Image (cartoon, rainbow, N blue to C red):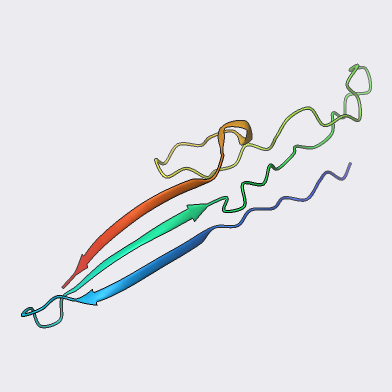
Amino acid sequence: FYGPKYFDTDFTVMKNFKVPHWEAARFGVGAQFFNLFNHPNFDQPVADISNSNFGSIISTVNTPTSILGSFLGGDSSPRLIQFKGSLTF
């Protein structure tokens, strides 16, 4: 069976600034966007011919998109936005 296409767009924006009076140090601020367009990804159709849902798509794909390191299911993986800051020296 061929299922629906998987569509996922992640995006990161980061801006670095020089730290005054500290030679090579830089301070960065930014944001990361996971599933930017909030697009659902549907799973494969049911392949069991004895199942009453045969050929139907009844669930979403489990996507590994989590800022916390644990996997979230497609139903509970809406657009995620993570703000970040960094100090490089």
